[in-house]
Length: 439
Ligand code: NAD
Ligand code: UGA
Image (tube, rainbow, N blue to C red; front, side):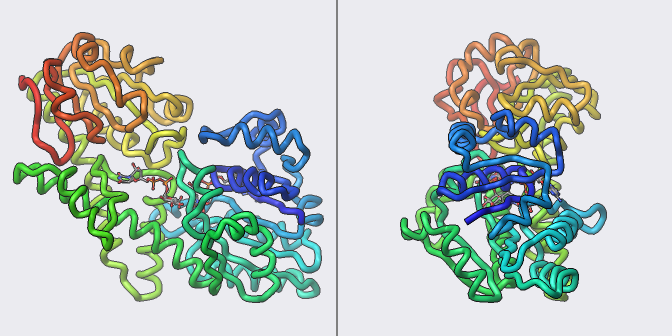
């Protein structure tokens, strides 16, 4: 079976590499020649643990090819995956489907009879049916199958998530589509991974409902953290206890600076927009979008107020990526918080183990350092924004000595009171009591 993967971003590249690892012949297509040149040279274009080894091995063994040439790739493929971006449309928050439709048109012109076209990108309900009708109109002579196969991998653990998913969701409208997906996912099927075979519409809604629910869980615990701060509680103790109830579950109950990334923000906006459009208001998720936006600003405000109170002029920011183990900075809280600090007159020094390259292009007037220790030198406040492993075991006495002030904002609750004891730091975390030396 020959697979074509259209789009080699986070999802397309990981999926393409993993399908090659399953033993299929995979050709990955991207319209960006710079990406394809690097991939052809065996260079991984995104930071994703474990991906480089699989990519190099499968390319070497001839199962994985990279090209900008869509037409011959599609013409030769049995299954064609679409994994292009579906960003937020400016203004109304709806998903911008222009890249999906453009890819569909190119595929329609080149596909062979019997082709199975699979949308892996996250698309609003109705899109698969629209694309199917569009392709059928363009090529009324050619029989093809349409499949919706949303992806649930997380950045930072994408390879592991793809190879060991909780479930595979497949939306189909005919038996041929369903049979092709069973073949494509056979290695997972043999490992007893549940496979949900459903309608195109259900598959589309499942993807958005899953992301919306997880984003809501994060927003919920963030508001619990606010309550804990006012009432003298500890959000980690609360989260641990409520998470032990199997009906709630312990995951996605880590309070922080608000969710970010290339998916939760845009997908909650698109889901809410779909609800408005279909007159089925998704009021909970509308609220999640608003609360999360406000949270990023209130976090910046905390730092600004602390700086003003103690005469601090320089803040060291540790972590720009929206989560650890990725170089992705799309809608990272850092992109709202840092400009807000700068607007308030604060100077920002920063470090991130992988995201500096991307961050430098969108965060002007930040001074970048090669290590956390260099970044904190001379800073009045240190602000830990991403829980990278390298920030989990900092020598806090050294940090305190290097800083000109002593305030450590840990917006990921990485450290505990015991870690802070004896360091001289004035420690402020999220939803937990203040610790350490004030002033
Ligand atoms: P991305 O922006 O990283 O990559 C998209 C790629 O598609 C780009 O490299 C672009 O050049 C290429 N492209 C666009 N149009 C093309 C065309 N016509 N032909 C060839 N290449 C084309 O996007 P991503 O983060 O991989 O997300 C892709 C989709 O998957 C989105 O719908 C997203 O919501 C969904 N998703 C993403 C994740 C994630 O962790 N990033 C997880 C699950 C689902
Ligand atoms: C998320 C989903 O977890 C994936 O299942 C989905 O496939 C993907 O979106 C997508 O559709 O693209 P991802 O964005 O990679 O994956 O990262 P998450 O681990 O979900 O984190 C998202 C944001 O929520 C991050 O900013 C993270 O810091 C924040 N978060 C997460 C918290 O603040 N607390 C938590 O307890 C969990």
